[in-house]
Length: 161
Image 1 (cartoon, helix red, strand yellow):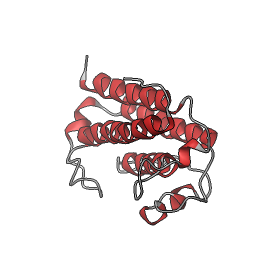
Image 2 (cartoon, rainbow, N blue to C red; image 1 turned 45 degrees about the horizontal axis):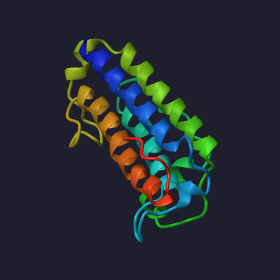
Image 3 (cartoon, rainbow, N blue to C red; image 1 turned 90 degrees about the horizontal axis):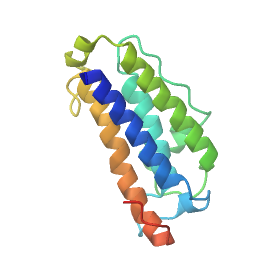
Image 4 (tube, rainbow, N blue to C red; image 1 turned 135 degrees about the vertical axis):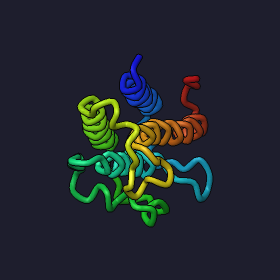
């Protein structure tokens, strides 16, 4: 496998895992907090999706994927403590798919050597190269999916892994 193929596989597999964790959850389940002060899945999903749109927009000549009106604002850090003003599961899944499709498309179009180029965007501290930026996208997805697992346990949903 080439480095680009590995990164595409990372983005595809983390998309699949996220879908598995969400498949049997209702809109109401997305607003359950695993413990006081923890973020619910609705906020996390929006944060994850809006974050990925911003991450991939750091690529030269990239266009940030279109999000629904008010989506990014509803998932800013300050909104994490709210329990209202969020979207339904179908909107989250469709928006995540759109953004992830755009990420994969941009990755596939990049010359392989571009992955080693320095990233000078806002995420450069965590992703110093453009290749590392795609790794960050995959890792960010898995970090939140792990948090979804705790909510699933609280709701009595089947253990997936």
